[in-house]
Image (tube, rainbow, N blue to C red; front, side, top):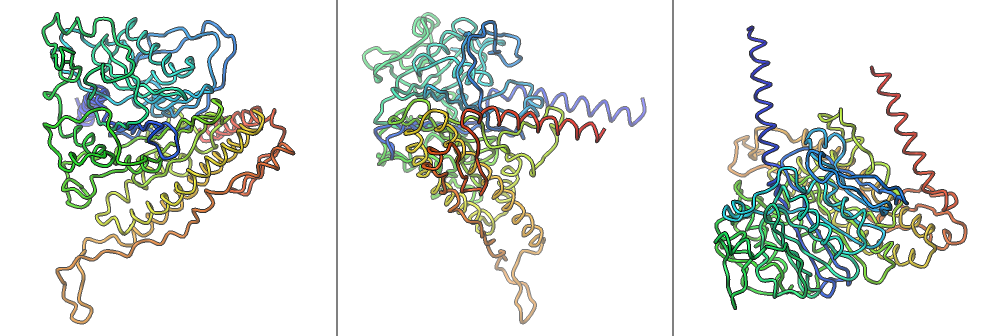
Length: 584
């Protein structure tokens, strides 16, 4: 065998080994989630949030899936390999999703991972935060190889359920019938109630109805203790008997089964996960008990917040890097800390459910493609007929190694986060970028509420077009701003690149001990455009809307809006195919 052939064989072997490691590691995705009950949120909405974290370049996008009427015989996969398919109802619902692009699905060899979904009935769901079950429980009831996976669960559930309770029951039914291949957690809510579900083993799970006057924040660890603490619950049939019969049950107060100690326990708690749970309590809790981290402390699932919690508060919590503590990597140079606001986030989302709006427009998914630390959350309403063109683009499967920042928002935001995070002084690039996005979000959140309030007074088609116009406008504006910021950071990063990092005395020429830091970049972008909305009165009277944020026009009869957008998508697909043929 020649040297070239030998190197090729070793390369293939190494790639195969790395791929195997990646597949083995996927179930241990490191995510963080937040729940805010409507009675303690700043605007009376229920709030769900989750980061989708993993050390990979798996890009996601925004998607709207249309309602399908009376078409029996369709199926959807529930396992990772797509070999176990479950029949769907003849009618499925209009829903929004945040799936991976085809390039990411090809690279990961897993399902769509729709992650965060909302539907026309005001149902919102995000799954999953990976949990860790102890060896005794897994020995008694092992995971099922071809069982339910987080990569297929969200849109499978949301496309066919009208309520959060029904969604939990469907998840439970699938686990009862087919088993689970992972240990997961899910948050599901509608305009009436919110639920939290822990999936421990191949067939054991527990779900509880969450209180409206509490909040929750947790990393990759189970935190549910006693079912009696909650108004309602749904569990697997032998959740208790399995643990009793196998001898790993831990019973606490009044002989109740302690779910945390039974199925998880301190033996699987690590600082890597536990510190993010602690940080959520430290930031949100009314208690002073969380000032200092202790890996032996138990942090309950639900707790009382120190005050009203806003959507912007949750967005900032999803960016939290343990600021103000000894564990902050930016302040103390720690390299062993797993923070909430991490550079490995593939996407981050915050979902709102309004209780004073029609169900068809009650949900808003605030999506940040890529990491949130130096990214921005943009809205996608469940009333939308289509995402903005840029956020909706789907990178083909054969472009898995194409890092295209000009075409896809994910890559632009990923590189922006990478450059801002790697520069040792955040004041130079990071803080100016983050300040701009903060202004943008401060403008978008109340404006979105205004848009929804106006839309609620319109007929269905006009309302959808009006909401869609605003969401699309700010999505496109965010991508344009990201590309401008990225270009600016690239320019000044290259300008300031040098191994000579100390200041020099201008008179003597001698090097000093003081470090040299470039001046912060000056961001001149106008964040006020995110507060501009279409003219509701003009839309109501004429069926057209001037898109103030982009200066374009959203014209035409509202009944034709969906067909028009579909034609645009088809035309773009044809153009892309033609360009590929020319390149060949």
